[in-house]
Length: 311
Image (cartoon, rainbow, N blue to C red):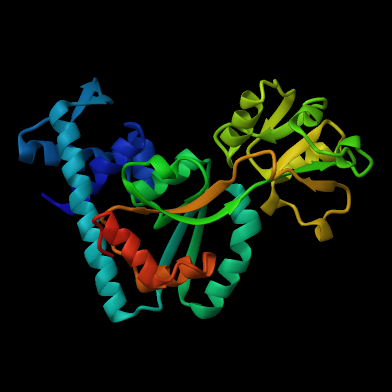
């Protein structure tokens, strides 16, 4: 049994049984991936995948258990590699961050700039997605950490570390009545077409909850996956935007007015998700503290230890 064989079955499972996609992700030829899988099945005497002709169409019961153990084996192999890299050269390597558009666009630039100044030898990769996708990337080891608001707090394979709370604002054309009404209420907001986040993104559930508890049905005419798109359509006068406060800097906005709506919605919490059992390289602790200064290495290690995880 070889680690490469385990990598092949894991990647095929991650790619929903698409061998071509798995081969591309592994930078291998498709026949090579198929051969690795066949060799492993022959060696084990167990069929891992269900086949229909040459196509993989499912995973056997035994295969699901083997995939689970393969994931554990490969994770430990990754930990050994990261540990040895820290011993040999703690200032080189790769840091992969899975996050949402809002975090990547508005919060991470200053953090990454400071991190690059401290660690010029570290290669950074940012993978964007919705919160569910972001959580999965960290959980399966594709990313070192996940940064998001929704989804990661309930993911069973992640340790969740709260970073900071945030709320929302109203963005509208400067002469829009919503910017002047006093007091600002959900009833007033509901009088106008609303542009806001897709349900899977950036605390959308908090917006829904507020309107539902008030017994108000908002007129949501457009949803989008990131703040910039919401602001763009608000600039066109298609509605008023309900946007994360972090995504709006009045000094940089020339075409929109803004008004805090923090008193109308429950705070959301941005969290960092770390795969349980993962070894954290030293520079990752430094990155986390740059992102959220209250999260010192000692605090992070303590939080991980409370969840039965050493780093």
